[in-house]
Image 1 (cartoon, helix red, strand yellow):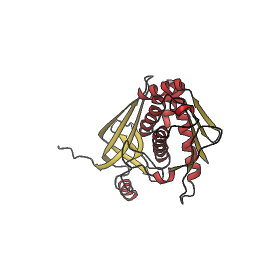
Image 2 (cartoon, helix red, strand yellow):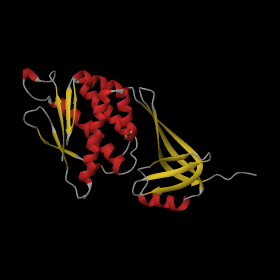
Image 3 (spheres, helix red, strand yellow):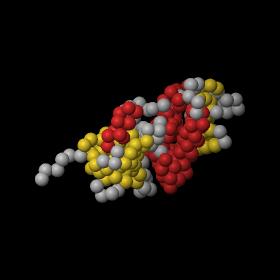
Amino acid sequence: MAARPDYLTQKHLNCGSLGIDVTFAGRILQPFQNMVMADYSDRWRGAVGARGRRPGEAESQMLLTALPRGSFGLELTKANNEKLFDDGQLADTLAHVTRLVESASRSDEEFAAELNETAPRVIQNLREFLEVVSKGDAGMKLETGDLRCTMTPIQAHEAFERVSDTITREEPMEVLGVFKGLLLESWRFDFLDQQGHKISGGVDENLTQQEAGDLARQYYDLPCLASLLKTTVLFKNGRVRTTYVLKNLANAPAIAC
């Protein structure tokens, strides 16, 4: 399994030579790796925050293993680790990242639709990735398995503008309601507010499994106060996407008679 991003540029070639500018190659690899790590962490290890560590980083580490012949490219391959099921999970993440990059170059609607399953931190890294490509006046070909995404320099500029116009806002909030449970395997929670509206989302990555399990046992199906991080993503076409991360649970405040 390998992800092979091929970055084609003319402005960075010295004296007409055939190759990739070293500085450009270094700048393009980091945001791509960050995008893969953030998506993998959110998809397979629970919610990923806008900042801080990403659960499962080592499992999604990519290595530069080759410069493919016949193209001016960089071949990235999964680093070895002891996890048994990571290959399929990382392949799914790489496929999603490839579709995400491609959708950004197509239209507002396709990009917004692809972001329905995308964490805000992935969007931030996608913006940085496309910024390097756009400012380098580069085209790009990204191959992952049977998927292939190709961008001209003009399409790369348009994709960067589209992603840059996507606004992410974070808002801490406290909500009274009834805690309906938490799944440690998926790192997801369910909560009903006082109006009976269901709030679902990921669990804070800074909580340990022990801490999350204690919260689940202590507050299951009981009135309580939930501390949440609400993230709102505003798309260029007017679509809005809202996600929640559970930070903590506490006893509901007593009501004075």
